[in-house]
Image 1 (spheres, helix red, strand yellow):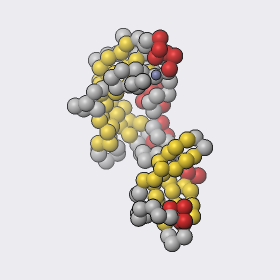
Image 2 (cartoon, rainbow, N blue to C red):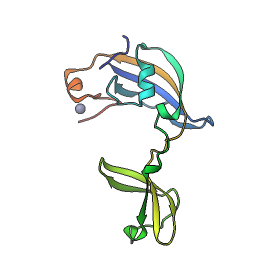
Image 3 (cartoon, helix red, strand yellow):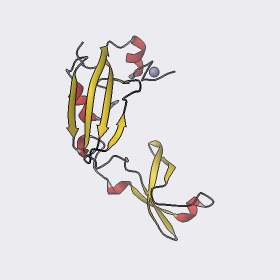
Amino acid sequence: MKIEKDKIVLMHYTLTDNEGDIIGSTEGDVPMAYMQGKGNIIPGLEVEMEGKNAGDKFKVKLPAENAYGKHNPELLHVVDRSVFQGEEEITIGLRVNVQTPNGDSIAVVSAFDDKTITLNLNHPLADKDLTFDVEIVEVRDPTEVEIEHGHVHGPGGHHH
Ligand code: ZN
């Protein structure tokens, strides 16, 4: 079965950066499951998946702008250090939960001094070119409920 809009795809992948370091992989785990055409995976990869079949293996390199985007300086927020009163020790790279207009998110402390803390809300993989090594395990039709919800149910997908 061919991958097209609304099909459920089960896939194994290994994700590496420009240095060849492995960022993530489903190797030895359950395959990742997603619904094609719903923006459930990064746009550049979704485009590559279209028209592929179960059993296909391929490798694709996505420039940052087709993956998690370029580093956006507008996503650096300088906040008053008093906001973190009583919190654990502030260090570069510390991950903190923040509330944004789009809901809860995770920011990383990218700089700080006696008075302020700079929070970076860019995706951790922003600015990185990514290579996906993909093996398509299964392609199936969605159930009615999956179409209604716009995502996969069951192994590798949502459980609710
Ligand atoms: Zn659902």
